[in-house]
Image (cartoon, rainbow, N blue to C red; front, side):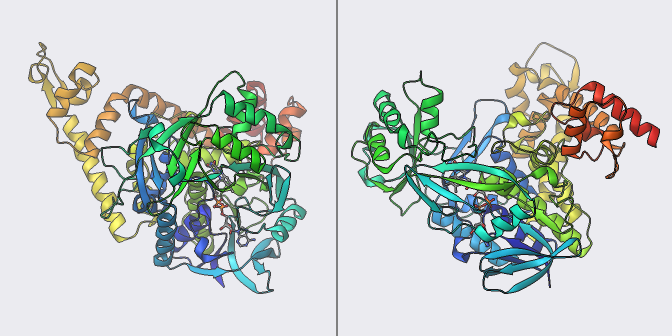
Length: 599
Ligand code: FAD
């Protein structure tokens, strides 16, 4: 019997399996094809604003995504580099093949057993899960099961009038498992996503486009860095134009999005080009980023023109764009519609509230993106291992991490459209920065034992470096020492808040990421203090637990609408109850009294 069985070798599945193995659980990962482990279904890039924060947090917990991203990076860009550090987002363009191979070697080194096959059903004993059955009839028994089937459950693909079953290009749909999940009432509905056509880079007129080189400054996603970086390539930018939009409008009648064939909602922040033209009709162009898919690969990913229009329309659209007049399409774009599960049925460990031992992570929970999937995989993997071999659970608080923000949003509010991480989702974003992920999560990783040898040494040395940098910023210095007419002696962290003294303060300190992080803390100190006060209030509300059998319908003076909102979200405490969307102060106060009476 395995301690943890993971269904699916995508971004959630690989991270979940490795996280469970790091905690010492006997782990098996069952997936259609082992050479698909780490496959990127859509654009070959990792990170970005919000998403990059998640990757750094997964890394701080000993995860694999950041390490693989560094090994495969062929273009790096710190998004929002000119803005405050809270909203800076590290993003790498990855060599698609190198990324897959990096993930495969990290999974192989983790001790996870990989089994090829299709899981056709979950198996239960009593109230809990006890394993899975494969399509060839083999039963694999496990104490806990993590479902990470991404876009594959009962999935249909679309392009113009074409329809076919499949979770992504070249892969089957998981129809049997999809049917069981629906029968058990675990599915909530359908969502959709899409991908652009891929182009042959040799047929692109690069001289007509605007080059976008990789960042000159070297940085890495992972704390471990990377000794063998790949050569960096340039991306390029072009635009759709009025003629492209005419082509799209003419092609809309064959669009599955507009004919009603696709019912599921797509990702708001990554819409198809037909959707953009329809919604923002007044615009005369949209940016298209031409991103190479690899070093020894001619494929180019035109980021910004995801589409499920018919093949001939895609061809005309591509050729209407500057630089792409003679571009050859190697693979046409398409959309995929798939079943997802209601994340409100999960607790903060991503375990199903009604089915002990069953966890869900990744796109199946209504999210979109590799990074969101990997972060959920980490949570489910750490916790399924804890559940099966009796370890302390890993709890991610929304005040401490974007992982916590996402899990809290999903399990409390649920989703009606694909959920993507954005820094705007956090009320603590000045604290939850990509540059301080190790400081925020490193101590928890050490305590839970989720880091392996060299990673733990690096995390410990970062934490020590940070403590030293904070101590250096506490030294008293007079204004005169900094070159201004002020005799007062104040800690450096106070002087550094003056923009005109930033460079002078920096010149008194060694240059290191830990010092940069400590300076950011000093600059944001007044806001961080306010956030700590808010967190203390939340902590008090968290101590008022709401029992699992609490009857919201019996609370005097609470409207049916409010009762329904509480029942759907099943808050575990007063803090969670206070953050459910649409709940009124009056309903909260009624709940408060009812809980106090019951105590
Ligand atoms: P996946 O990466 O989908 O992995 C699921 C894994 O489960 C696969 O390995 C599959 O083989 C396996 N599996 C499924 N069912 C079974 C079964 N029954 N038995 C065994 N194995 C099984 N994200 C963005 O952020 N932006 C985009 O623009 C974007 N566009 C996309 C376009 C397309 C066409 C697709 C398919 C996805 C797109 N995504 C996009 C989403 C992104 O690919 C996912 O968010 C991410 O891959 C989710 O990771 P996951 O691990 O949850 O699932």
